Length: 117
Image (cartoon, rainbow, N blue to C red; front, side, top):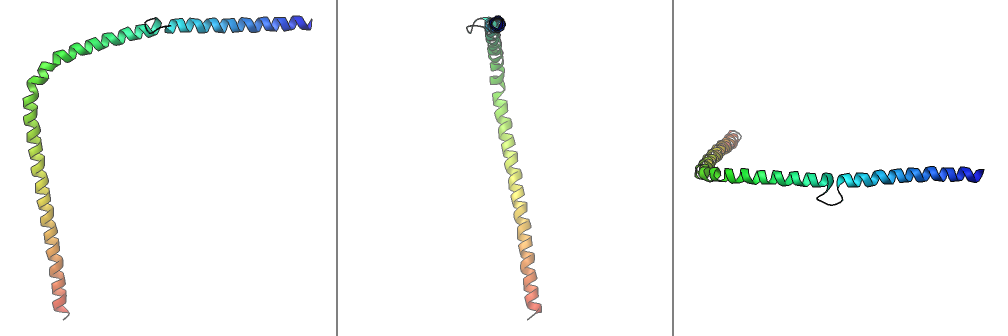
């Protein structure tokens, strides 16, 4: 009778294994055995469709981009010039502030020297 229970356990285990293996095979088939089959194939087709749509959008926008390129260059030069002027003014203001502080320090030391001589 012990042998019968062992066979029964083996049969149950084999049935579970067969069921799991069958589920695995079905999932592989659903996923796609090659890059053109199953869900993988559907995803690939969708990706190609999106790629083609993006190419058509790019080709439609390219003339518009080329049309506005000179205007963008003018804006870029204007922004560069304005930024440069602002930076130069900040540097001049910083130098003037530093110069005034330096003069104040020298004046203070000069007065201290005259007072304590």
